[in-house]
Length: 256
Image 1 (cartoon, one colour):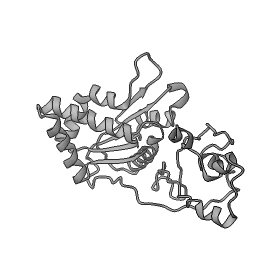
Image 2 (cartoon, helix red, strand yellow; image 1 turned 180 degrees about the horizontal axis):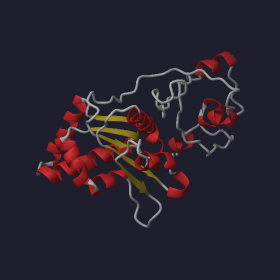
Image 3 (cartoon, rainbow, N blue to C red; image 1 turned 120 degrees about the vertical axis):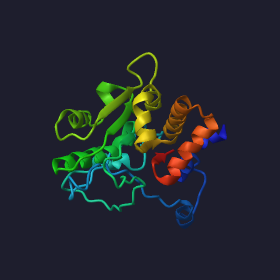
């Protein structure tokens, strides 16, 4: 009961609930944890847009009993373009391109996990426009509803349809648009015949961005593909993925 009650409560929330408690202000300040910086993945290309940085975030709309909704997204939503300024710092991304641009890329990013891959797409389009030749680039995206949650839909479709577009394939899982829920990890198993030669024979780099549960599901989906294509055991298949992670060919940016 206590663990349920204390969830998402701040020190101030507790003091408001127990007004008889009196704490000197200096002690109250000492109790407050330091507010940690909020990290967001850059969702734009430094090549295509050298003087601009975009981020992609979902606004926390649900409020607690005091009307507070999240720590940062509501604030970001309230900012006015060309008027407000905020302090930022840039942290190096774990994602790296292969040195050989002909090596295929397999990108998996449901929801706001799409953020880095929007940058990848803009990078790829820019490179093609400037005469570079790229290997196959496959993107797996997922959200609840196609008509409500499909981020950057036109931009991604253009990256397939237009001559200078860099995407070879776009696979989408809309989990609530049919009776049976489907997720990006399900698409990986479904399209194993297309993925396997890229992953096994052509040395494709795999990039995964999103929640930890999704990341775990994606690793399991790749393990299933390896099992089915090679006859390896689950333990051996997971070891293959571990080796790819260690060599920098299976990269993840996950959050809780």
